Image (tube, rainbow, N blue to C red; front, side):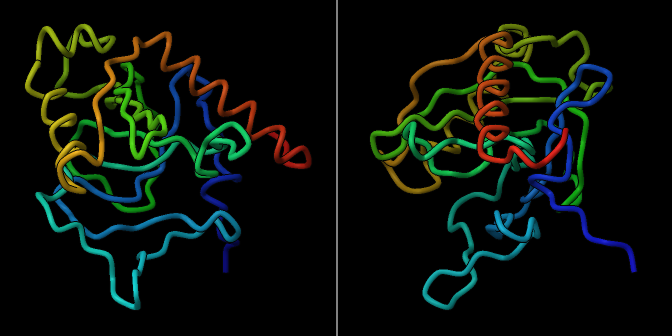
Length: 191
């Protein structure tokens, strides 16, 4: 039996080709809330009050997951989880790892705390000629609007507040910062 890879700590956050990596926790078109356990690195179906957590809203219109080897440091106002990312593509299998092209990010606020969502595409996707969030806004304005509206609505009115967009360079800076925070918290894990 092959050893299980720790999806947070055992997968490189960046590919050799300059793309970043993401782990899919929730495939597009589904509404089951899956998470990755920080200790074991395994996916699990989240339960609340003994019941499976189902998002009582429209299914996820994108693949949702995280960038491995990143952490939102609790000491700096984060939630201790890896950095969230949305992948604009057809549904990808839960637990799959993808090299993705970062376009930018949506800056959201949840309960008064910053909650950035990195936005990415597959390198050879149907989004031809899209290299950054500005391109996406100009060529496919509905795509970004769908992401924003979905986050603003899925937990009920007022749960998430839209704070603007981060450029591709700003999003990469955010990823690198959270990778450094992960490195500081995991000095014994080699990259």
